[in-house]
Image (cartoon, helix red, strand yellow):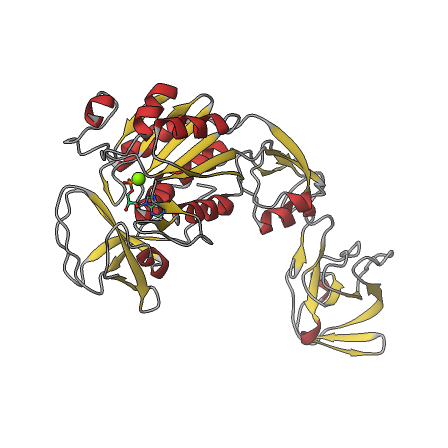
Amino acid sequence: MKQEEVAGCGGGHDSPGLALDEARARILEAVAPLAETERLPLPEALHRVLAEPVTAGVDVPAHTNSAMDGYALRAADIPDKGTKLRLIGDSFAGHPFDGRVDVGQCVRIMTGAVLPAGADAVVMQERTEADGETVVFHDAPKPGSNVREAGEDLARGDTVLSPGHWLRPADLGVLASVGTAEVAVHRRPRVAFFSTGDELQPVGTALDAGEIHDSNRYTIRAMLEELGVTLVDLGIVRDTTEALEAAFDAAAGCDAIISSGGVSVGAADYVLEVLRQRGDVGFWQVNIKPGRPLAFGRVGDAHFFGLPGNPVSVMVTFLQMVRPALVKLSGGRPAPPLRVRLPLAGPIRKKPGRAEFQRARLVDGGTAVEPLGHQGSGVLRSMSAADCFVFLEADTGDVAAGEEVPVEPFAQPVWNG
Ligand code: AMP
Ligand code: MG
């Protein structure tokens, strides 16, 4: 019955489902960055996505300055080590020397202080000896030695950062260095999420026979929090079409909706049916393990992600397909998965057919990867113990210890691709 309901939308009982790359491409094609923007003071802009380019309002460095504590001088005045020059003043950061360095003269200078007129080089203090107004130089500098030119990092008018850039701590520093006090960023997406299942109870509630704690809503919430979206928690939704319809109604005004469970072919799985009635099914089923019964579509103006119920499947499908979609919705550029090849510390058993994300741990200082034991899609502890996925293509079979496999560390960058 469920198979007929989704005929023509990419899945069915016997269909292997879409290849992961195809599924991800179709999702990203369907998602457009949110057009609305807001202006934020710089300190509030961390982990937001720039909506407009930022150009430098000043040169960085603002003035030609010293890279060392030492003496500013004319390089031509020190043809040989041991030359002596006359000290005529000081240039400190924020307190420039207001004279000129002429032949045979030098000025004591601190790191970041303005290079005085006439000088073209700095000799570091450690290579000198001062005696009253005379300084002996044990280095023969070249013009430009230990000098940072005005505008050498960024010139006034240069583009500092482009739209779509996810702002990290270094970016805020760079923006401050060019005098930017406010930035235009995309508004945060509003993302509704709920769990489906008659067996589910929230934490803090004792379990009756057959009941389990709802864990998916906590992992989904946490993964959403890491993306900085606005959360709309719709709680636990019972396995009826009416309850699902009410959840979709409650999500009105959101930019994305994420459910877990009820999207497979069981007798109590109603998500696809309600999605078809209330919205559009883009596709159903992706050829990955765990995580095959994923539904993607639309409900009103919101993108809809119907994640499987099994807790590991939830995390795999979220990380592989929902996260890039939310990065793009947020105005960012989703980075393609980072896959490094590492030798296996133990063998892996796999049947050719579906692409697999096996939970694993980096070992030997990150030079090898060790698969974890229990790979069932319900064993959430395997995710908790893992720090990476071993990714095995659909047509891969058993892999012997020592062979190299593609590994996706969890801590990979997901923005700025
Ligand atoms: P379903 O696809 O709804 O049949 O769910 C598949 C499996 O995942 C079943 O064992 C469910 O009990 C379990 N499951 C579904 N939703 C959750 C949830 N929110 N938290 C923990 N386990 C769940
Ligand atoms: Mg269920």
